[in-house]
Image (cartoon, rainbow, N blue to C red; front, side, top):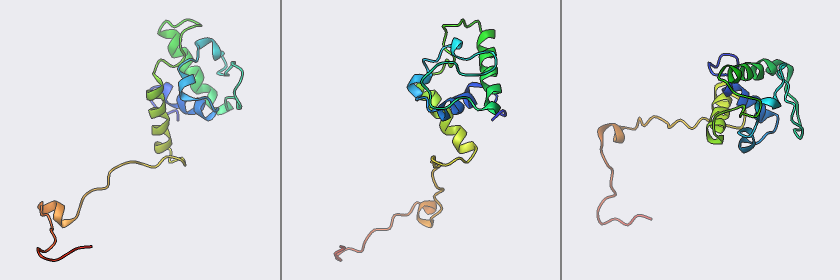
Length: 126
């Protein structure tokens, strides 16, 4: 997940994996993540995996460079953007639980030729 240009995107996936709801993610404060990348707030069922701490540290340092204080939000995005980022990470990494919602390509001959097929007149159709 280090390939993402903005650190908040993989952070959203990591924090969601820690079983924090999207609506609660927007309430995370900068003081809830220490310098080592550990989440210090209580009440979560899981801690930050060791390999993911670098992501939380990157987001923390970015927020500090932006001038955020300890009581400012850790993730500045709203819950909808955070949920969409989590969905995008799951699709990109081919993780279970999310199906790719891409529309199938219309390649039938009727659609290509813009022809509509209608039932024959006078014949009842069930």
